[in-house]
Image (cartoon, rainbow, N blue to C red; front, side):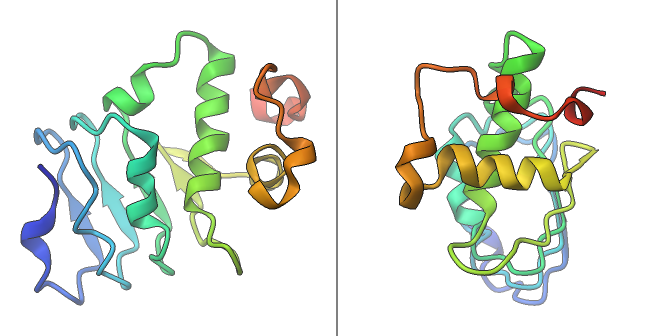
Length: 143
């Protein structure tokens, strides 16, 4: 299930659904004032679920720590790749996301740029599915 039971809470700015068996982020998309979404230790398992958060112009912080979506990473490089893919999913087609914290870590400019370079459908020249996205990331991301 998702978070569809909160439809009428239109001025919601912060939501903490951590520790619940929620599998979907559906239901959060209709809350343009949401700044913080805490979904740690939930059952969210698919990257496509982040599309429900794409049109939240105020979203600054998202925590999915411990959700299957994040726990699939078997190495530090895979974890970095998850961050790049997640940031790309949250970037609006036009404009800039306000997302500044993902899973408790600051989102840095290099991650935003990398997310567009590696995953932007309008620039397929940058997309190469046979390589590790982390190999061209700046060293600052690894500190």
